[in-house]
Image (cartoon, rainbow over all chains, first blue to last red):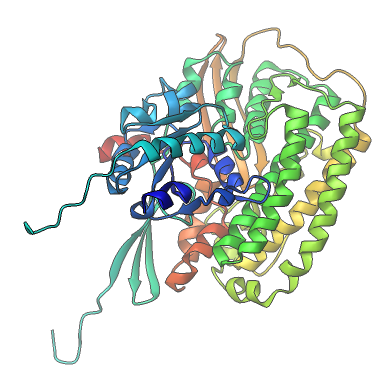
Length: 148
Length: 375
């Protein structure tokens, strides 16, 4: 089980205010030229299926709640990868009125991938780094409900 | 309540903001009667960053880079439209060669965006292999953007008074070969789009927008052209479109298939425009420097892959703009989308929603009040 988690990590992608530039590069990672499925990575729509949370774009006041929800719904162990300069620090939007800053203002981030827009190679590299972190993270044994 | 007459029970379910079909956050609330959609509400603002305000705080020459990041997909056209509005304020005449180069990059952006959309649309229909094939061909365009502009996605070649880079003879040859190759690949995919019964089953007769509705609700871009409205800002002849000669692609049926065809034919049209622009591009300067600060009010319009883009700027003779207003095509198309959906089944939602090519990053300009109210 633990082995399959980093041999075939499932990814959840959330755009929290990005310009789409990084998002299309994440999608480009899935397609024939870059093809991350050869690493066993699958793009998932359901946070409860995911091991890696890929976040693009700066956090703003409205989507911070959605982002926190998604983070909490993703089961442990999980890693968060901030893709793109905006997700790392807020980038060029850092002093915009509605922007809180980087994604790490809302949820803990494990790997930062800079670039505007981050190149697919950089994103793949970031995810592979995230896999190492995922392997290091300990899994808390799940306690049975009801005191048994 | 009398006997035998039960109150109809409707279910309301939210679609988004995070959803596998949508790469971007938007929330649609559907009221459904079993499988049939009765009503739709929309909830946006998840991507609002306050870019218009940021543009008022920065130097007008630096705003080009902010405007580019309104939308990463059609970044060059945003920069172009911003430059056009500021050039009007400055009374600046752009060199002829720069106009042709602007057309080439605009059309590369359009190709990239349409191929992206065709892929995503195929994915929404469940046609995975077609998705992969369109995205493979899209990499050809991305390579050309990288070779000519220096970056894959945000190319930053447009500046006030012209363009920042030139396309020399070698690069022009490269672009030409790339376009011919892309055309061959599109010819290979054309039978799938035009004949495949699976595609027709999912799209023909779905999400119909009539000509009257398209006009009444102010649809723009391929959404309007799919309903027979020949509305395309490129016909006004900005940049070098006037000199190149331009006829909009129009389909009459108004369903998802018509919008698919419009975008597919526009891929061919963009290839032809690039080839023609490369051939007819005159020699000369590519940039003139502004000699004063902007003053007055002006508007500019350009055609994005999704429709009409509109910029309004007001300046008072300092190095900052007093006000910048951006109206993007997806915002104009949302009323049409809400009119398309009722009456169809829940399983058709992804196809119909994608058929207007929603770009939420563009849309989020007007949620300022709503955000404050909703907080």
